[in-house]
Length: 147
Picture 1 (cartoon, helix red, strand yellow):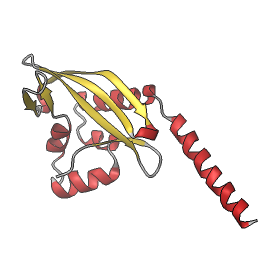
Picture 2 (spheres, one colour; picture 1 turned 90 degrees about the horizontal axis):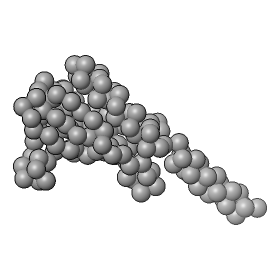
Picture 3 (cartoon, one colour; picture 1 turned 60 degrees about the vertical axis):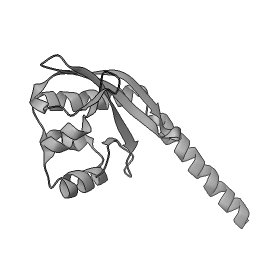
Picture 4 (spheres, one colour; picture 1 turned 90 degrees about the vertical axis):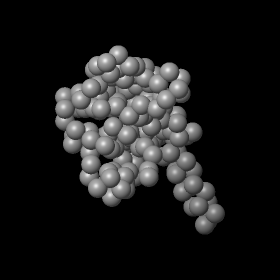
């Protein structure tokens, strides 16, 4: 009987993971990313923090960067210009536009991201891959490098 109970629990856990994996779609990733872009482009820098994984914000923004939100967001948007020729960390007030070019949402492979094209007001264009992950509460939030 005990083996049957353990088997049932394992089956239920696998089923719940499958259900959670189906909740997220490429359109979900695009919607979250567009909401982040809108908040940023409206100049609501502190408002962008709600789109990041809380653990990531605590470690990187609050602790390592000592609450420097502009630096936190700018470094998150760092990308390669001219196919890796050089790295670009944008001045946020010089971003002319941002547009989602591609999304991926494969929770099982832990591949959740949006490729965003950033155009600066002085003409430079580049693509940045914005990674997301499923938080402990089950939400999709952005995550970046630490350190």
